[in-house]
Image (cartoon, rainbow, N blue to C red; front, side):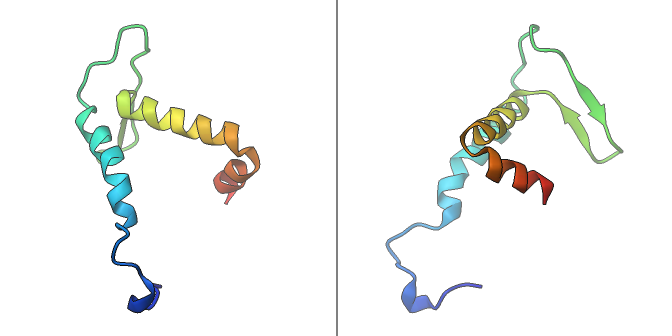
Length: 81
């Protein structure tokens, strides 16, 4: 639920303002080739959902590992729920 409009500061940008560069990075680097040292993983779950090990997947994996290292209890409880 959105707080009352008078309580929201008009000087603060919305949360999506901070997340936009991260999402743009994920989209723009999806087609960059991965070095041959990294194994080529391609998994088709169905006709609409495909997983490829590319730069955005590596980046997201590092974020998850970083989160697990900093807050292991919170991260594990997030994955359990």
